[in-house]
Image (cartoon, rainbow, N blue to C red; front, side, top):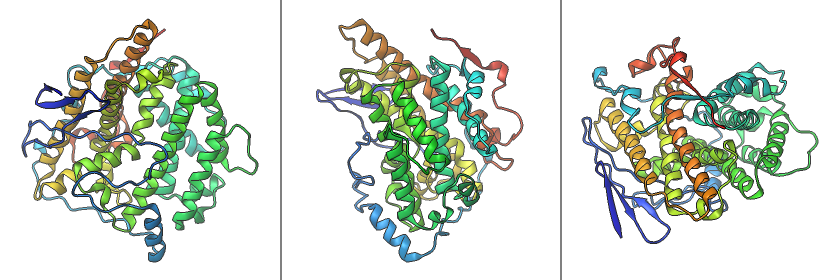
Length: 447
């Protein structure tokens, strides 16, 4: 077995199809210590949706059925844990987020050339709320997938983002019964874990089926049409991967929410198990699949299953998830409806008893940067194949993953969703002006 070191982060390259970064959080309490990390195992459709983790400290299984029974027995669904009171700290010791995360090697801030045109692709809707969701999601996809090759692909990816974000918001985060009714969904399902799970199953079935169903609500009709659009613009193998990853995102958020209600902290006991959970609840796996869709390149099995490509995907998914955590920490801390304990900063503070926010924030930044450095190191290990087209597609795919890293960072830094006048991080307190002026963004043009 050969071991490679990059800025203190070790990667063990095994002769088998595994390429696992060693896990040990080595960041010192004060910056700028380096952090090592453990990348999660990709979710395999068909396995338990809430499996027992390999971490020795995680001996308890999180069964969706057990969560349902406990929640049903409690007959109360207002048990969201209270927001923690932070110990006093010097805010000057907090990391400047963009400055500390925009490391050398990441692409610059870029936006899709189809960003404006994609707005016109949003279908007619009598709900301003859905148009608002589309505007936000189109903006995100335009930065994270800036190399998208057509407006139709950008619009379809944006619409899928709307669907997933909307379901997470109205079923789990805010539990918006009013919006549910506007969408034609029976709001009483919010009081029943079993009925929510049944509804999620119906959405999964509709996304995969070709025949139109009758008596659908707006969301069911939307997801059926999306399934057909994605099926027409991809191939059967990739479409199945996409459907599996979409379903896993929804089921993961279902499990996380109801586990939180009954006080089951199995998924957030330590950094390792937390990252495994977080890459599912943030749709990390789908983010790397959408790179193929937006670039109209669908990897052959030999490339998709190569150990270097697998680990590049996992690094991208981990980075994708943790960037959201760092920028959303303020929002989750202030908004009592959010689960502020399910955030990498909170997990680090819990692991290091007495650790103040600045120390945990620097550890999170170092952890994220170590993932980015390992991604770049893995990129140099990308093999070559005899087929020139395969080589071209593999390189373009990896470049697309890297654009997701960069676009995710810059989009979070500019979006008002993560800003608050009382945010701990100084740069997130300005709720009116984007952190990066529009004149400094680049429109990417790719043939």
